[in-house]
Length: 223
Image (cartoon, rainbow, N blue to C red; front, side):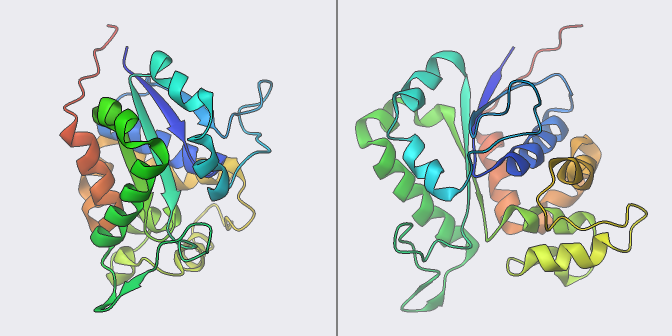
């Protein structure tokens, strides 16, 4: 069975990505290993270690290099909302104005390649899948809850998403980053038809799906 290791900002991001993977491969039997942050061994919905700074730091550890021994692919997630922070170091603009999601993602990928190390990246690049969300992973969820231009938003996505969620039968918002809420909100993407129908509506989600497609990964059924 193909295995995926997840390096993400937080637990809620892992939940969203897991649902997307289930939808893409049309199976609930994927082997997904949370690497950063790890999950509480007694309760998979708990983790005390998250944040974009720890994503960067993870590449400096032996755990990162050893992770390729136990995972066929590594999925690296980060949001770009705070990429202009001095420790992140990637502007949202260049001399021509605001960067497109495609250009911003390329700049983030280049940063990751430097952090990973050119030689090491060259050896394992075909087993690394980038999941870079412009500007947050909540933007990826908007196509599920909007039919107008808001489904393509890349800014203020959490607020926009919450305005839609409060009107649903669940009647909650996800400000508190509760894992069970993110599981409910992103669950529609675990259905293959739904994911295929909506993923193109968000530019950075589309790029993530294209990254997966480019690997030509085949999940063999155990049946």
